[in-house]
Image 1: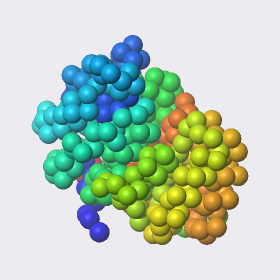
Image 2 (image 1 turned 90 degrees about the vertical axis):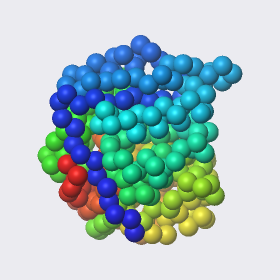
Image 3 (image 1 turned 135 degrees about the horizontal axis):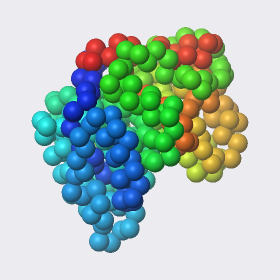
Length: 302
């Protein structure tokens, strides 16, 4: 197993870069989000392709190679202490072939995003780097939620103060017990779409799952695909986040995953709702499903 690599905590005055590896970005929403980041004392630069647009496909932020180049340039530039994604949407998978993940993880810095950005978290976490799954730079509603915004700030600036990743909203016990291991996962659709690709990395540890705007049968299909692929074989515990806009998500998820018999909680405030509690993917954690707590290991790089 690869060593855990934790970036240094941020400090007021640090400079960070915003990239758009995925969908088209609304400039007005981005500007509102940037003001929240600047209120923490951060200097923020927006990379060139973030608002460039794609000449053929309106759903992409920019050309695949341009988005990948911006990610690489921001990551390898020593002036930036962190790389924040502007938003999710669709598009990350199109640019993965242009990303050298070994090159990126050799430079330790925070990387933040969720939803479609799961396609980047997966190979980064597999190489030992701890990343943040949480509100992005143009996620206005999430950044304007005081609880979610403070969680993100605390993990970046004062991580020792975060002792329960499921608090304050909490979660509900499905299967009791205690599980330990590295926290991995993210968006269900992206994880299922990764099977059979070069960046496919089945987890060994505690998994968090979230989804948005999918029919119940599609959630069933994605979970079934992961089950048949052996994706859950080394999973020690499950944290089920928000399945926003999904019909009967509790029934579907429970029916598919409860038979695994591993400690499991549901209803965690992780996903596409206004309250999106940031969590450190790749970090060793302890899930006490009976008490519905998720305790992070030491953020040693902080």
